[in-house]
Length: 263
Image 1 (cartoon, rainbow, N blue to C red):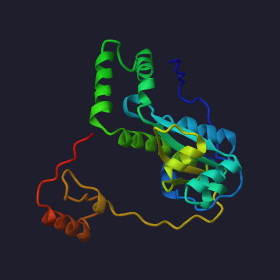
Image 2: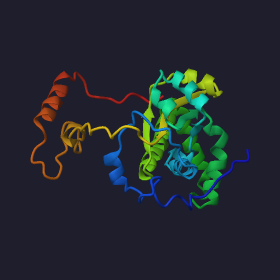
Image 3: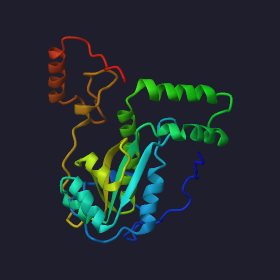
Image 4: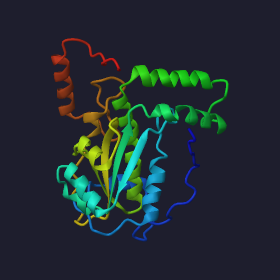
C-alpha cells in the first residue's frame, strides 16, 4: 500500500472569515453554541481546508487516525443528507456539512505504513517497533470494541474541527440525529462503516442563543475518589445536592462497582 503522509500545516488564515483577529480558544469555548439556522453565505475554501487539516492533527491511539470525512456542499446532496437526518433544516441551510465516519478494521490497511513512518520520523526506534506492533494489535483485536474505539477517536477530530471553526469566526452545529444506514446508501459508503457525527458549518442566521448554564464542578468532578466532590477555588463546601446524590448512590449500591470487561 502506497500511503501518503504530510507534515504539520505550515500556512493557515491569519484572520477570521469576517476579517477580525482570530478568536482565542478560551473565548471560543465560552461563546460557542450549536447553530439552529444558517445564512446561505459560502464558507471560503481556505477556511474549510484549514479546518480539515487542523482537525486531523487530533491525537489518536497509536497515531492510527481512523477518522474519515465526507464533505457535502452541493445543494442536492445536502437535501439528500437532510432526508437521512430526520429532516433537520439546518443541513439544507448550512453551506457545508461534514459527515464524520470510520471504517471497521480499516486500521489494518494502514497499520504497518503508519508505524514505519513513526520510525522514519524518530517517534520510535526500529528495535522497539515489533513490540509496539504487537501491543497495538493485541489492544485493537482483543481488548476494545471496534465501534467504541472508532467513535472515541473520530469525535476528538470532529471536536478539533468545531473549535477551530470558532477561532475563524465560523458557526457550527454538531449532530447525532440521523439514520446511519440511510446516509451510507445515499453517499455510497461501504457496508462496514460507522457513521459517527455530522458537523454543519457556516454563518449563523439568528442571534446567538442564550447561555444555557453548566453544572457546577462539584456536581460532576470527584476529588481522588468517587463521592468526594471537587471543591474549587472560592468554594468552601461542595453543594448539598451533590452530597445528597452521592449518599443516595451509596445507599442503593448492593455490591462494589466493577467495570464491564472490554470486548
